Image (cartoon, rainbow, N blue to C red; front, side, top):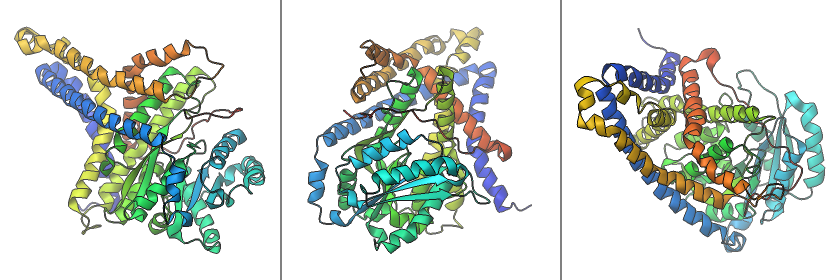
Length: 505
């Protein structure tokens, strides 16, 4: 029986979750049946991850050096020497649903403080029709306050259409289509517009637009590249629970290692891209959740692999998730991590779009590398912490008889302990860099809070399992099961703000 296209696509959706569950179930079952096999596997796996941690550490240090160097550069002055810089405009999309006025105002204050000509900055306040009564008063107030600051502040309203998934991606698609004729009426060529897609709580570094403009002008073929800044979560980092801080810095450090090897990376969270590319690919897709990574892959597929990411070693800062209680914070973190892990939906998209019948001229090396990187990243996210911290000891306890007397088995606990001790170098480095990236301590926080910022890293194993592996397994299982188990877009609560945020040192 010949499979339909829908059935073939479902097979691609099942693969990631099936691999994860096969690994975990096999590790448990074989620990009872063939514990020696599992011990061999765990030792090899841990050694592999030790080398990988060392590998990541090197790239993290490279990014850290470039980050510290770029913080000292006057990018506004360097941008002034770019012959094409004066012709470029920045278009910032800020999709919002229920965020408070203070959140949006703080974001626009940061845009207004950027060291870049404001008459070449345009802002899109992208709201949802279903909360029109809540959105419009805030948006109109912001237009009154900032309309004369920037070249233009657009207000758009998105009505959910049949077949769309309620969320950020459909909102961005709608707002881009609504803004396009207005940009054309203003006479700005699409090649001269750089789009920044931001979360509505994104606080830009004062030199962000100058650095982005300079990089754009010096990037070969800039219309075929996205631009990824460092993402930090400094807006409310001093108020967030310890588990959230560890997860937030973990995300930042992961992205920093990716920035040092951009040939393997995609876009994440707040980032920039050419308006021309967005027009070419038909804007953001309307039936997905992971719009930040998907829009890069749309360009990658559309240009037959001739699309890439250029790193920006300056930060943009956002909130950690908010909550009304400690458990509310943890629940928000879990849902956020699960939504990020839903990026596994990119795997079936790539497999389907890059199949030979659809893209016969696509370079095979780039195709298989991108598919492998996407699958391996999601697989490791879901399995590595559990295999390293939970299941690693199980087969040792279950061995018996002559197997238990083997020198290899006897020495395995010490071997794993040595591996974990060496791997602690990565945690110590993360702790050191995290303390240096913190914004100034608020006056409301006591000096002893610095000690909490240090000892919180003892939570790393628990955090990586509870807010790493488990939400990733949740997301991949839901994709595997399909139907009513599929994820929609959950909006993370943002911090309530009353004072100016000093997110950068």
